[in-house]
Length: 578
Image (cartoon, rainbow, N blue to C red; front, side, top):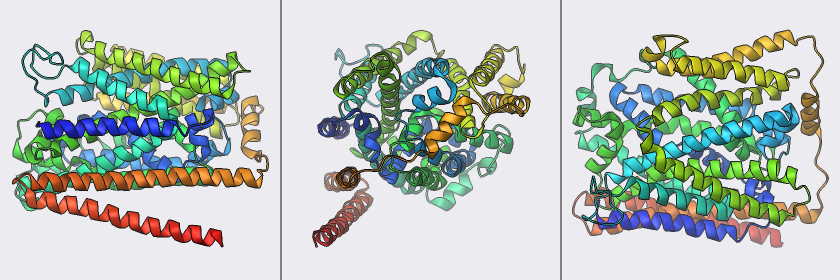
């Protein structure tokens, strides 16, 4: 990397912190801090949901699958489009209709406080470790590109590159500072920035990758014959169905995603946000994995998990590599910031406020921010300590996937079933967790675990809890409706208290402000990317023509979009003034 790359990465971090501080000054209530006052627009919520699904694994793990196995990785990505479509059709609107302040509030009303405590402990520990491993993974991926002078205090003396510890501390610190300052609105707006950077770099990488291989036809000729299949023995159509359904329960029930469905004004908006995610995942996986697919024909002996970064280093010029690293960092930082804010929400509303019901709204805001720093600090420290586990983090993450994913299934089941209650949840989770532990220790499924680990994990994480809940439904078929279902039905059917004209106008104004801010940030980000590319092209002879072309397109389109938006807003203000 060059000094220009370092400057771009530092500018990216500085921009996130400035956005967090600027948005933080607008936050006046705990609802604004945690659910944006229910005034987030559907497209803003949808983009944030899309970014929250990402992590470094999108580039490292699934990029590696694309490098090894070909277009089946695209099929895996497109399955999330079906999952999101099902979420919008069946689930997202139900979350919004309840008008809850946090996902844990629903769990308490539907299943009782013991289940809330169980879910909160398991999810906070599991998600915390999962995010710590993600931070560590993206740090490992990044530091190999940052050599430092011998004896530099930030350098790892064994490698001469930036220390993984310092990289983790920097990433963690920036993430939980902007999240604590700006709350959920900062998460949404920074997700817009991260989405813009990610899409720009993914779009640029595709044609550059094909060009480096001699064109699309040359790539197809050089690719292995089994490279262009929708399914493989490892990722069969049965596995794809399980994967799709498992992610339906995750996107529909994971608290980080539920928070986005309850942050919009209506059930219709919640559905539209999920449909936007589906549309994006129907298209973007193709662009994600083109670089690693092509790199297989350029360097067949590379480490698959490093293929994306190696291809980036192969085709990108000085400065552009810094943008690509920022895009990869943004994927993990978006996931971590979403986790921090949703559990700050749960802790503040469902733990602290229960203990201190008379606490003022200002106190709730301070508690939420303090929790964000504390929880973020714990995640960061855990990430720093991962090397001391000697590589066991992969086993930990795999086990946690088996333990966390099934949590969302009873939550969604409870949105439709009138009969299941607290005992049903504990029985389902108890049996599923036991099966997961037995599978990981080799007592269940035997050699199948080592031969097809992905299939076994998907099977236990989905089929076990669904089958158990189905059996419970049959057992309870003639029982009366559970009290929790009655309370949820009443909440969903209850109409909000009529708002005054002043309140309606205030809510509309807040929603418009958030949408305007997001649009301006997105167009500003693309304009900045275009301008940076133009300046880099002027100072470099390599790929000057393509950089000028892409830079001009990004800058020109963003300016045209801004102009049309300005004229639209001006016309709208003129009409309202009359």
